[in-house]
Structures are given as C-alpha cells and as structure tokens.
Image (cartoon, rainbow over all chains, first blue to last red; front, side):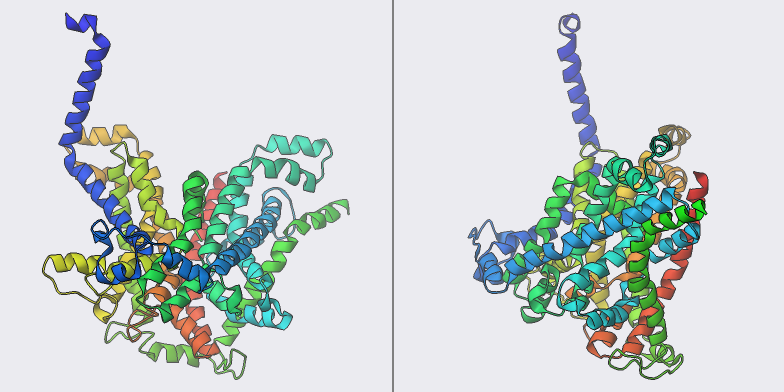
Length: 295
Length: 297
C-alpha cells in the first residue's frame, strides 16, 4: 500500500487538500474580512498616494488612477518642510511630547507606589478622587489654567503645556501603575523592607524595575496622546513658532482648505511617528491604548 | 510619634502629584464652575449672574434646538447613538469573524492602526475621501462610476454629522475589536459546541451564548466610547469647524467658540460645566467598578 510507504507525504497532501476545501467553502467569511481590510486601508492609502503625486495630477485625476498616471514627486514634502515650517513643527512635537511623557510617568509612579503600599491619611478617599478626575474634560480647566500661565509667564515657553499635559495625564498614570504595583509579589518587597531598605529604595530598586512592561505601555500611550493632541496645544501655545504638527496641520486647513497636495503631505508627516511606534512597539501600544480607554 | 513621622514621610510620595492635580485640575475646575455663573467677559470674573448662562444655553439654537432636531447637544446625542452603536457593532462583527481565520492578527492590526494616528490626520484622510469633486474624492468618484451625481457630504446639514461620525468610527473601531476579541476568546468552546449540537444556528449561538458571556467587556466598551463622545472636538474642528452654519457643532465645540473666539468666558464655562455634569455618572460608575475590583483582591 502506498500509505504504508509514504504515510507522511500522503497525510500532508490530504491535509492540504482538506484545508483548501474548507477555505473555499468558507469563502463568504474570507470575502467579508478582505472587504473589511480594504475599507480600512483605502482611506489612508489615498492620502499616502496623494502626498507623492504632482499637484496637477492630484487635481485632475483620482489617486486610485495612479497606475495610469504614475508620476511621483517629493515636491509636496519639500513644500511643507521648506516654506510652511513643518521641520520646526516636527521638532516641536518632540519637544512637547517627550517631557510631557516623562513627567507624568515619574510623578505618577511615585504616587502610585504610595497608593499601593504605603499608609497615610486619606489614602482611600484621595484615590477615589483620582479615579474620578481620570475622565475630567480638559475644558473644565482651560481658562483658569491659562490665567495661571500668564501670571507666571509659562505660556511663552513649553513649561505651561508640559505642566498641563502632566496634570491631565496624572490620574490615569497613577491609576494604571497602582493597578500594576498591587499585583507585584509582596514577599519581595517585605523581605527588602526587613533588610532595612527605605521606602524610596524599595520603589527605585525593586518596584520600578519589575514594572517595566506597565511603564512602557503607559509611556507609549501618553506619548501618542500628547503627540496627537490638537485642542490643548491650540489653547496653551500662543507663539506660532512653537506650535507642534497637529496645530500646524489644522491651521493649513483654513488657508489651503481643499489643496490636497499640502494637506496630504502634512498629515503623512503627522502620522509617521505614531505609525512607527505602532509597528515597532505593537504589544505595549495595544496594551497601553486598551488600558487607557478608560480615560 | 514614630508612626506619625513615617506617615508624613509616606505622604511625601504623593506630594508632587497632589500639588499638580490641585493647582491644574481641582482649583481650575472650581473656578470654571464659578465662571459659569458669571458674565465672564474677556475670560475674567466680571459680574455674577446666577444660572443665566445655563438658561441662555438652553435657548441657544446652535446649542439645543429640539424643534428642528439640531444643535450641539442634539449632535452629541447623534454621536452617542451612531458612533457608539457603529463602533460596537462593527467591532463585534470584526472580532468574531477574525476569530475564525488564521490571518486574525493581520486583520486586527489593520483595523487597529488608525487608533495610533491623530484625529487631525484622520480628519484630513476623510476630507479626501469626501472631496466633492469626483476626480479627487474616492466616495464621489465611486458614486460617479455608478451614475450618481457628486454629493457634498460635509457641506450640507443633512449629511455632515453622519460623514464625520463615519470617519470617527473608522478610527475608533479598532479598540473595540481588540477588547472584544480577547473577550470572545475567553468564552469556553464547549458551551458554543453544546449549543450548536442542540441545533442552534451560529447566529443564535452568538446572540444567546457569546453575547451574554461578554456582557461586561461590552459595557466597558460602551462607557469608553461614551467618554470620547462627550469629549469629541478635534475631528469636528479639523473636518468642518462645526459647519456648515453650525450644523456639526458639538458641546466641546460650543465651549471652544464661545470661550476663545467670542470671548464669552461665562457662557463657555457653562458649556464646560455641562460636559463635566455629563461625565458625573461615568465617574460614579468608574468609582463603583474600582471598589468592586479592589474588594476582590
């Protein structure tokens, strides 16, 4: 019998055939999923393709006909970077987002540690206030915060926007990190305490290193939150030279409403960093966003 | 004595956070509530006028116009139904379909990717989709190929909200897919098989077995999406500036226009206070849920 001579090959080809049959039989499922994928990709693909097409092609033929009009150019990018200040805005986005990520995480980690392990007056009530503040709309603070900033001159530099993003990022940072800290093995912490380590030392040498995954998820979440934010930057940064990409892009809309050569290139520049973060840190990214959904 | 000193030392850990939260959240919120009871001209406390701003807001046709089913509050209501409903339904469908194929990860990544990008970028992406010229906008291009005249999706009150919400659903569904997909995988396969053996159709099984099993994650998703509806601003600002003629304004947009464009601090503050009040049930829910979770540990 053939089967006894080549059992492996036969079963493999039989399995392959079976797989093909089930795949074909389930064509409605695959069709639906492919359709979903196409619907989700097409809108962004349009902007990406448009951003590298010559201005005349954009206004005369749809981006989906690009294969018939295959001209490619980087003019749109050199335009926005050269004359519309997108190079500076790109740098500004980093200058805003990096401190506005590190500050709430470090300050939040300290507080989360206290809420998780230390005893102090009003601990429970204070934490419930933090849970409540987590969903507080920024609008509830804008005008008074602006007045504080102008009193102390904080809106002329980035200090103001850093502090604002830190304050509004803190409740979630504390909530997330505390949730992670309380799940750490208590024995390790207690044995360190018995060996005479101070609270600060336990925090720094044991809790923080053990919490790298949570810190990374939070960092990715907060960084993208700040990078992608339009409203707070719009309100708190008055100097046009200091504006980040979101504000710069949104302000193009009023002057170049339907000029998609400029708009598409600027939105690609705005998307590129978040997409790199997404592709390279997908695990932390998904965790961070899912956890941050409560915000 | 030693104990008291230690507790004081412990409290130092929350001092920086407490200071920032007090100065930049709690104190401003109190001032905003006070401002909502004031004319607030030039964004300064000027003259106490009680609840006048709230009364005026309720008569402001751009804020709430029940006779014509329009206004910012009504639009937030449309958002609540269509955005939350759309994301939930699509998320549920995509999560359960993708669960049955090998390229599940790829599908989820594709649907989740827009979650990474700014609402500003998503807005421009969809401005291009909706462009009124059929040789620029994909949607009108496709309709044109089917013989339909181009439609100015964002230019007319009848379609503008729907058009923006579709863009937001495109951006927001990925989150729902990821949360619900994890939940669906937690449903024991034996239950599903037993139901199928008993003669239930796949749809019945899904409705009667799977949905009740994932009721908690679904409620989390609904709360989450509702929070973003109350806060929605960026995508509206980018796509339409609340137009045409205020037709796509939402509460957060009213706040912005009144405060920063009209300089009516009190009127704007009243809109902000309404946003906070809408959040209060969600805060209560979060606190309750946290207390239950914490008691479990």
